[in-house]
Amino acid sequence: MSEQRVKIETEFIKLQDLLKFAGAVETGGEAKLLIQEGAVKVNGEVCAMRGKKLRPGDRASLNGVTLVVE
Image (cartoon, rainbow, N blue to C red; front, side, top):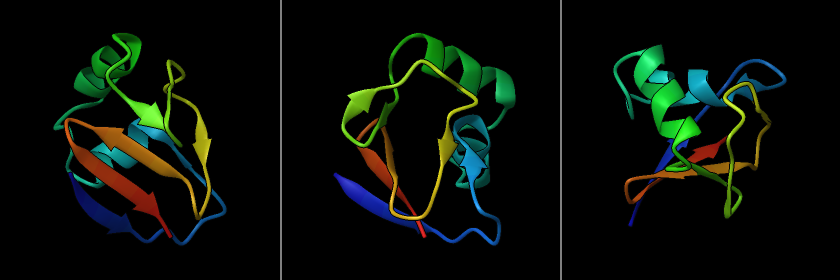
């Protein structure tokens, strides 16, 4: 499993936006579908909320890649 650090300049980033920003998905529609199917975990638990707010220290994982918000 690989890990990618994503630095944000705001207080939080929404889950679907994080996936797009980090290049884990190409479109918002793809992010929505993967999140709804339960393919995305946030801090180790499946998350079905695409608007979930992630703050520095949170981790999202998809297809063997972990995105760490900084």
